[in-house]
Length: 95
Image (cartoon, rainbow, N blue to C red; front, side, top):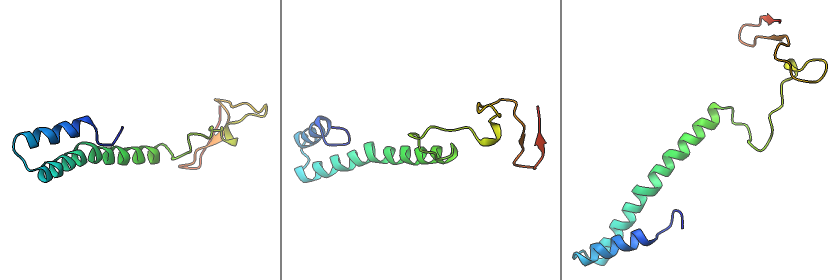
């Protein structure tokens, strides 16, 4: 089960108890280990995913991208050389 307790945690708790640790302390140590080993890296991955989505524009991946109206020629097909306006400085570009 992803993200759940499994064989590793059971074995770790059993090993700690077999070496003389009290059951409550062994269980607490296994839970702390699980939080550190699984959830903290998952939070880092979630933060990285959010930053990547924001950097790439945050569009919904289920919706296909459509070309902007400035780059579509009169025939209705996108043209690599269609004239457009540079949004940063307002200069017109033409092919």
